[in-house]
Picture 1 (cartoon, protein in one colour):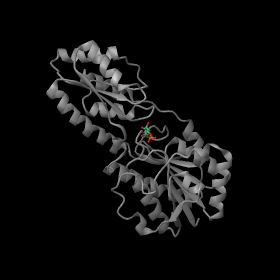
Picture 2 (cartoon, helix red, strand yellow):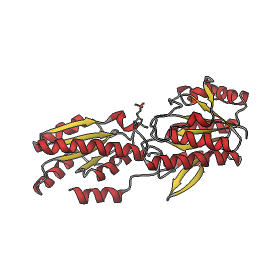
Picture 3 (cartoon, helix red, strand yellow):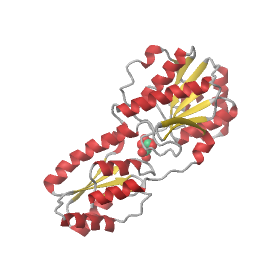
Picture 4 (cartoon, rainbow, N blue to C red):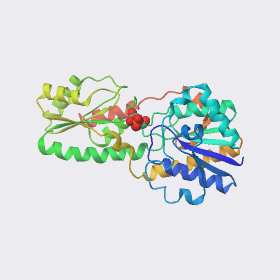
Length: 319
Ligand code: F6P
């Protein structure tokens, strides 16, 4: 194994740079030439890449975003484009590829592995919605950003005796909502996984009002529905002045936390070790605090859900 590529694909997440750095430096240590592909699979398809050396990843471990840039590559849905990407890889003498991203990115890596290019996936997304792993790079930083923002909204909600309805990211998964709901003392979270109506939320608000609470936080996961409508309805039912805030892409930026830097570094190093050992079509995961790897197709077929113990605890403590 002499030349290996690395790319970031899908939505960016804080810690991706730390993973790129680990891949590049581990490869160099093993005498391999690392190549960085720009804008995900587009870089492979349109031959947009750079040879990387030790200093090309200097001073990036602490930076959010991805120095390789990222994108979702629609062409990769078509077999002829995947074939073209594979041929480009072969023509440039690429012996392996590390893909940092989510489920969609793993699919691309699975196709390229099938064609004969050894690929290893690393979970990078703020959503934590990859079933095979307990943790995805960027999740911790994103949640800390949410907590910081909600604490600020809480201050003004308290002054005005309002209800603050806050939409957080997560695509179809409520992991960000659940944990930040616990950490910010939310009266309720609303996610696709948990069937809760606005009427029930209003009931919880009324109950805690009975205990003397005069301001309220409701966290809505983006897949659930429109936070403005939720706020309006809460106001209609309870008479409490309510405001909606959509946190949006601010959740994807910022310096990665210690946890994201460490996980990204261990996974980046692990990925290159797997390629060196001749492995292909694998994804790296964290299971019960251990780093493991799975077959890509097996990983994509796995399921995981919200931890209902956490949800029940949140309800017990908040309302
Ligand atoms: O997957 C990460 C994520 O930030 C999701 O939480 C969100 O639904 C989506 O990406 C937003 O994507 P885009 O960057 O295309 O707006």
